[in-house]
Amino acid sequence: MKDELHTQLICKGFCEFYSEGKDSMLCRAYEFARDAVPVERLQEILEKSQTTSPTFAFDTFIKGHICAECDFRVDGCDYADGLNSPPCGGYKVIELLKEHGI
Image 1 (tube, one colour):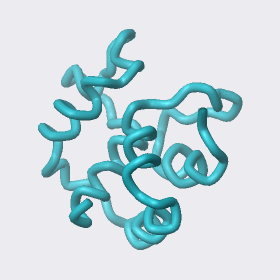
Image 2 (image 1 turned 120 degrees about the vertical axis):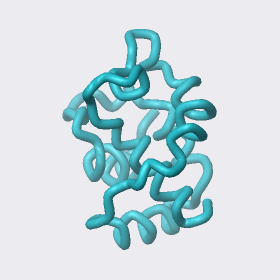
Image 3 (image 1 turned 30 degrees about the horizontal axis):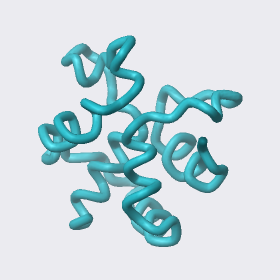
C-alpha cells in the first residue's frame, strides 16, 4: 500500500503515468525506493535532483533486478519492452538513487 509522502515524492514527482485514486497500485521500483532509503534521505536526494534527468547508466541493473519483478510487467511495460515510452517514476527515482551511490 502506498503512503502519502512516498506517493508525493515518487509518483507525483516523477511519474508521467500517475493519476489520483490509484493508491493501491504501485510498481516494484516504488517498493524498492520505499524500502531501501529512509524517507528523509529520499526526499533530500530527490529535491536536489528535480532538474536532473536520469542518465540511464543503470538501465540493465534496474530492468534486470527491479523491473523484472514488477506487477505491471504482466500487462507489459512499454519502456522495459523497448517501445517508445518513458520509464515510470519509480524507475527514474531508482536511477537517481543509484547515481547517488545507493
